[in-house]
Image (cartoon, rainbow, N blue to C red; front, side, top):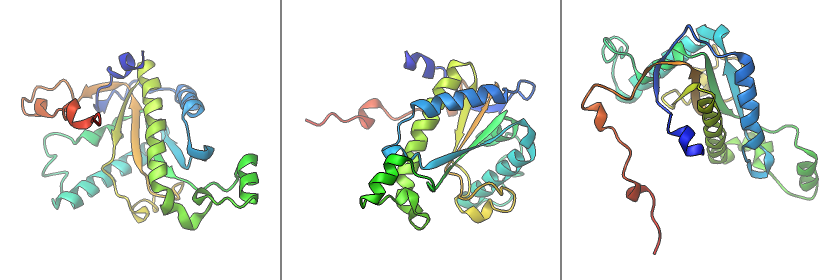
Length: 223
């Protein structure tokens, strides 16, 4: 059962750099996720950019951008040598991962035949209009969640560890200098590899208190 797979998820703080995952396996799992992930009107208004073992410099730069973002959000100067002088942040996994996935929006410039037919009949889709990309942001982020969770399950089933990061700049200007392949800023970062150090279980008694909200606070059966 799928819950027996997903219960094995553990957040990776650092991956084992001596155990990279092959491009072939990552590609296979991504294709399997693509096949079964649903999409509104079959547009899949997002793109997955994959940075493998040969792109270490871009992983390092992504990590630095995450540090910059946290420093800006928390108003902490030189956060790497103050807050993280002794221990690394959770998103340190970006540096040590085998593969880094960057999810972004995309505009559909080649609709399928059914979509073209509907467009010819007067239907309009924001997914095909560059000027309306902000209109389907919520749709894109929702579908990225579908895809990434399906891919995560396939990875865990294959004994590959994964982790997610949302602490990064949302302005494309922060990315455009070094990440020429990005037309839009990332919406989600996902790392893949063989875990070396995990966030849980932890020895810190305070960190053990970082639990999910109770089920009853999340799920409401309306009477």
